Length: 223
Image (cartoon, rainbow, N blue to C red; front, side, top):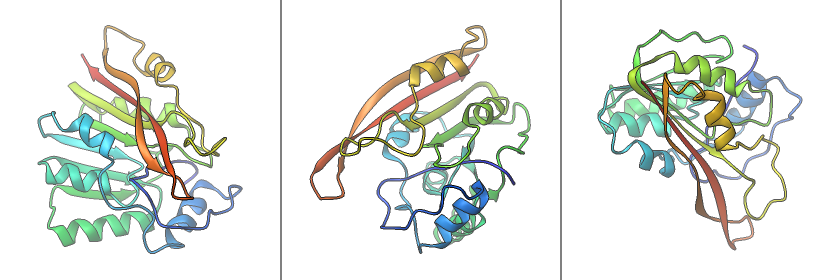
C-alpha cells in the first residue's frame, strides 16, 4: 500500500493527529487505532440528501472510514461496498454491519492507488470528504472509479470547499467543485454534470460558538 484517503462523517471525538510524515497507510492506521471511534457512524447528511432520490442498486464508497455512508446505503436498499486503506476502520465497519444485520454492506481494506475496479459494474460511486493530510492522488482515483459506472450510473462527491469558518487554513487540500467538474466531466458526450455547487452547513467551533462548513457537491452521470 502506498497512498490514499479519507472520509469523515459529522463530528468526531477528540483525537491526536498522527505525524503527517508517515506513509498514508501508517497515518490512517495510527489515526484509527489511536481512538475507539473516529467518526460518528452516521451518514454524511449532505451525501444522504444527494443520494436519497436515487433508485437503489449497487454502489462503491471510496475512503469509507468506519462505514457510515455504506451502512446508510445498505439501509436504503443498496448493495454497497466500502473501500478504505485502514484495516482497523474496515474491521469496525464490518462489525457494525453485522450488528445491524446489513447483508448489503461489505467492506475491503485496499490501497486505492493500486485498486482496479471492474468496468461497468456499479450504479453509484460515492466519496465523502475524500481528502487527506497525507499523499492522496484524488483525481486519478476518481477517474479510475468512474470506469466502474454503468450507463446512467453516477459519481457523487461531497468535499470540503474551504476550511471551517473558525480556521484560517487546513492541512488537507480544499476542492474547487467547478475545477473538478471540468477535470472529471469534461467530455460532454460521455458525462452529464447534474450538480456542481457549494453548500454551507452549520457547525459548532471547538470553543462552542456557531460556525460553518462549506461543502462542494459534485454529481456526474454517465451517458
